Length: 447
Image 1 (cartoon, helix red, strand yellow):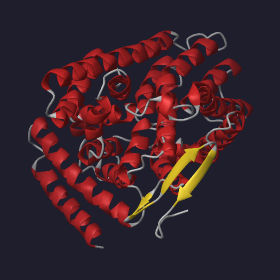
Image 2 (tube, one colour):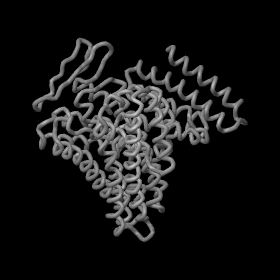
Image 3 (tube, one colour):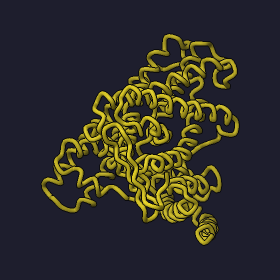
Image 4 (cartoon, helix red, strand yellow):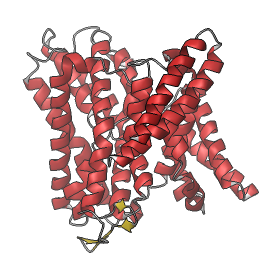
């Protein structure tokens, strides 16, 4: 109750100051809004923790509540002005997430990892594409379109269902201090989904172009999407190389190096118009797999709660979920189909690769999350489908918003089920060995 009262008092104070600072310059208002968001997100995270929810849920919901979509205590132009700070925070988080991209440490080999990745991408894609095509005469976005244009929209929505969120996954791993093999495997799969998203989207646009009505699909978007991916990965590699070189020369101030890397990556992403999440993932992969000692450097990027509070609060404030009011049955359908397809896909992959049974049975819960990369690709779809892109983008953002809230809760439950969740002072640990999962829990552990 004390945390809730503090949050309400802070909101009332911000409402009063919001009125007083309205005539002020944008930079001053944005700095003030950032301070308010950080304090409010911290209180919201503590409140979420006390009701046994992940802190990131509190960060997101507080950001949404005080943002332009609801209470308007933080204005839209202030959110836009804080975009660089948001990019720097997410780049720092993505650097830590990229450090988990080491297939050799997952214990299932490259073939097994490729099978799980293919299942996590292929099953949701096929399920959503087939269902949306079958209901296209009743689906609001396709009911008045030709079959070819309806096919393009169905394939685009199916492609978005294949995207994961390494940022949300990393946030739960850090919060719960889950460093077991199951958590690492889920993080690697989510990262692979994020990286391959541009390839899947580009292929979808190329395949759908001959079927769509004239002018309904802009094929240039496919090339732009692939260029976005290539530029992001190249920028990340350069960032990783620069950080590695500096660390070799200086050999000190690792934490400050990572903070500087976050801002440097955000600057590169803005100048080159690439995605900061993919930049951070590529930089983290380089530091872990190419640079000796990169693991120790990136360990400092873990438990960066201010970075999480900053990015998730700003992401929550920037969410536009207007489509939920009109399209909520279709949002529920898309979210449910994706979850069912992920579950059956990973079960199929587990039967084909007898190595990681925990990933086959519970890994789908860790892949529910979406955000970051998916939100970055949504505006590209608006430009790729000019006739229906605005409505399609609104639906995609609404679906992503649901996954942002539901995903961390599902992943936390998965960690509890496989025995890698830290509960209070009791640590539940799991090991994957010889094709079996062995859970050892303290008396307070969850099963």
